[in-house]
Length: 334
Image (tube, rainbow, N blue to C red):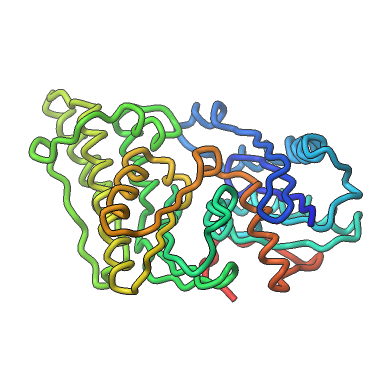
């Protein structure tokens, strides 16, 4: 089943052709250099660049797959969650394309597709399993009971882990994308030199990173006001370690309490070097199977949208020309 998948939820215009779990092409047009000027994504700029790039990116994906538009069986598109203007570009283009080709339109949830990135190179992975999905806008811990059935057991109550990384990186003077650059320059943590809090929440599987982010920024601002020098690589490593401590501890606790022996990691922050290595090591200690996407599939891309779109189609989830973009929508929507 040949699917053209489209992703435009933030600042990547992406298109891919997939056949089940097989990726035939995967094209990504990034806007990083332009948004770097502003220190973060400017929604209006992102929307305009999507509109300029989407037709070309889709054409490139079709050409790279060695097919024509007439060979397609369906169009899959990210419709939620994300920047509303950016999503609308992808959704409206997908609707027009599906209508003109007279083929099904498949709506795909962005976080579900991040989880599906794990299927691309791991043929043996299948539900049920526990998945931690971490990105700049979301931190969700959920049970994947089937390919299109999810049970959210933990969520961020405020900021996402990626937001904490990005804003701390910005306060350190690092370029956008902050979380990526923070990970690159981090050396060895020193929790005695830089003391950071651990949030406590009523639901043991929920996350909170707003207070941690504020504490980190306050340390940096206070040091600047006093004329004290911050050891940037050490501070970067300290905040990275604290965030990873929280993410790993809660994920392993949920796995042990709920009886899961298979854990997956997904989302943009799944590219974080410490999170990947430590989670793998901790799972190995406990005899758990651990999966995470290759680095090229961690960030926003359309290949993961196509793979999840395949399972959405099999479950009967298709849409008509009335499909609309949705800025916020839980992963376990029905």
